[in-house]
Structure formats: structure tokens, C-alpha cells
Image (cartoon, rainbow, N blue to C red; front, side, top):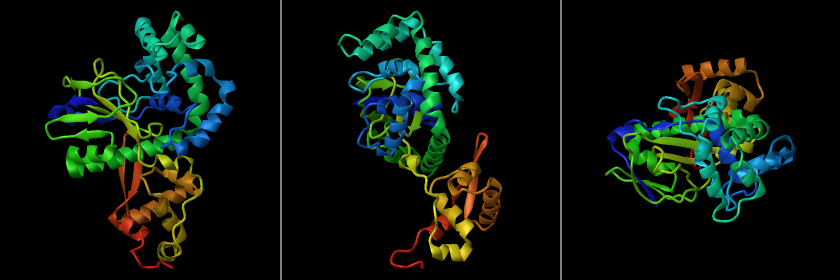
Length: 335
């Protein structure tokens, strides 16, 4: 059991980070082993294996321990305060800039007390092991994660919207109470984390460095964290809606609602099970972004949907009225 000791300032500085590099690295946990809670990744795993000839599979395989539970911390660097949406390129540059001796030490730990594989030994002995790993990750990302990144990003941003509402309405107790069963927070500032992906145990003071939360579609029932002795408090957790990653059928509302407000607007409302941007709704429904915008404008004017801006993105979500329209009353048939 790992315990972070947080103060009021740490909670005030808590931030959610979405990083395509983090997701790329977390995905390595599932290349050779699909966890029971990650059935939504079965299709992705099949596609990733089919693409093995197009990326440096030997090096990527060497970046995870034989037990499948450890990856080097330097592959998922913690961004500076204020950098909550690092691009893949800028985050990868941080990996490549890792001191060679630090990289070698963390890579050596992957052997878990046994002789390293030939690929791992070659990486440890490389003049620039971090740069070599970064190069392999770039090719791996291009072939396995970049094609699904729009869908992954939609899920992560939707999760953050939901978590923000939980924090605003119920404070830290509500946020951590619904985050994952592997995290427990009490009002004295102790954040207890049950981890399978780190050997760290004991209590660690935050040092006033805040808390970084990393939603992920590649983290299942297990939370992940960097070595607490060397980095600020940080937790990876499974994003809400991760199971929708492989869903491709357009959402369709029931007939009664379609007759009430029209098929286009009803189906759009059904598509807003999680907050989404215009482009994502257009792709899900198979219609033009302009048609989506027109329907959203009407639904918004009638208090059925609302929007919020997150950086350059505008996400739309159902209001309480929208939820009431889309969810039939118990025992009351719609059609």
C-alpha cells in the first residue's frame, strides 16, 4: 500500500493530464496479455500484432518486464505545471533527453533479478538507451495508437469533464470515491493507493508538488504511478467510457423521442452519452459537422444540451433535461 500525504495546496493544484505518449506507453501492458478488465482492447491488440513488422517490436517488447507489471518511469515523464495537454512530440523529446545512466538503471530493473533478454541487454548497453527507446516508441505510436487517437482523446476528455463536475459538486471525497476502487482518500489528507505496477510502499509527503491524475483507456483495474521517492504524486486510472473504444454502430434514439424532436436531433442526443466535440459527433453519426452544429444550436437554445471549452476544444453534453428525455421513465413505454 502506497500513501501520499497531501495538503490543501496539493488538492488545489491537482491537474488532469492527457498525453498521447502516456497512452502509447501504457498500451505496452496489453501487447501480450489482455487483462480481464480490458476486453475493449481485444481488437486493438489484434491490430497491433498485425502491425509488428512495421515497428521495432523487439525493442518495444524489451520495455516491459517479464511479469508484465513494470515499465521504466522515464518513458512517461511528468510534465511541468500548466502543461496538461503535451503533444506526442514534445513529450517524446523529454524521454529522449533522459540521462543515459538513469535510463540504464531503470531498464536494468526490468529484468526482475533474472538475466536480461538479448533485446533488453542491447538496449541497456546502447550509447543512448533513452534515445533508442524514444525512436522505437515513435514508430510504435504511429502504427498502433495514432490511428485510434481521436477516439481515445474523446474518451479521456469526456472523463475529465465528468471528474471536474464530481470535484465541483462533492469535493475531493467525491472525486476520489468514484475514481477507482484502488484509491482511498480521507479528510486528514492521506491518499492511499493499492498498486500492482510499482514496488513502492509506505508514506510519502507531496513536498507541495501537487497531484497529477492520468485518465487512460489502457489502465484497467490497476492504478499506476511513478516511484514516489523521485516524482510528485501521480496516479493513472481507467477512464469512464473506455469500453466504447471499439464501438462503431451509430447511436439511435428510440422511436418516441425521434417523433417528438426529430430523428436527427434525437440520435444526436443519444450520441451524447459522454461529452463530445462536433467532429466526434459527426463521425459517430455519419453526418456532416455543419448538420451536427445546426442541431446542437437548436438543442442548446431549448436547454437540452450545453457546452464547455477545454483549451481549443468545445465539448457538448446533455443537461438534466436532455438526460430526462433520453432515459425512459421506469415502467413507462416510449413507443
